[in-house]
Image (tube, rainbow, N blue to C red; front, side):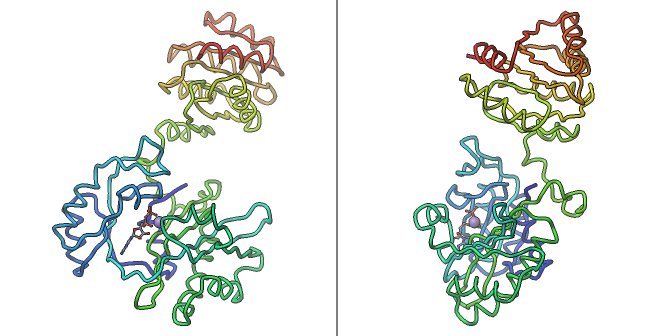
Length: 386
Ligand code: GDP
Ligand code: MN
């Protein structure tokens, strides 16, 4: 789960991580009020969307008066912000964070992520922070330092010092940075984060250290134990079909192609997407209905695929195990009756009760195309959409 910068900063505040003064605004008038309350200028008006690269896309602007803050907020709220992370379609901005402008001396990069390869938590830091960090990573990766922490032992003083020295901090900054890093690590662990990133972490002319940006992602599988963080979920930022799917506990991800597909099991779904691509077509989604799906779940999954306007053909690939082929067939027939199938559907079924399943499908009166195996199914659906 992703949250907004202003929400991440609320968490920072709880963990005593320094952030600029500021407030969230949903309208230009609210933005003016925040700017007036801050009292000194410049203030920064920042678009709040679940994507980075806002600065380069025109979503972060400095204002030298409350009137200017109002004008900028008016401009940014309602704009379709396109950044390298939103894709060409961009994102509609619904709110802005108005913050005290800082006297920036230096922009650093700092992040914490789990490292699968070493099964440790890794702190990444760079002196060359700011809006071009991707370029730094690509061209001068040696400028990024990595510090591995054994999660069972936790963060130690020497980790903090190593990070601080790696960032070339001055003694006063070093003093502020060490407890800050500890607090960030604790936040990362306590809240089951999958990413915590500050870019830039700013050293001010006054030699203070402040998180100027804040990005946190959470492990969805742990959200059941963080009801307070779940409150931060912003459905405006999520794909409507994915929200619908999450209501039914379906593992669905919307993609760019036009072949809808429904599969039982995540691994089989990945393999199915691969074979769709190999056959020269593009998957419109990832959908794992799960090993133990009911007819109702199949029905809901099918409905979600059908409501995606980009879908020009559907491939159902089921290996009947716990989810029996007859249960699947029933679900498909029910969904088709209720929603009506408006695109060709290729079915490949194998496994438990396959004969009963085939019988239900063939007696349903639906126009389904059956396939002998997965390769055949993928080729048939690719032919249809192409
Ligand atoms: P992002 O582009 O989405 O990562 O948004 P950031 O919050 O990182 O802001 C982008 C850039 O705007 C930063 O790297 C800064 O250079 C600039 N910026 C943001 N806030 C301030 C501020 O208070 N003062 C100044 N001078 N620049 C700022
Ligand atoms: Mn940033």
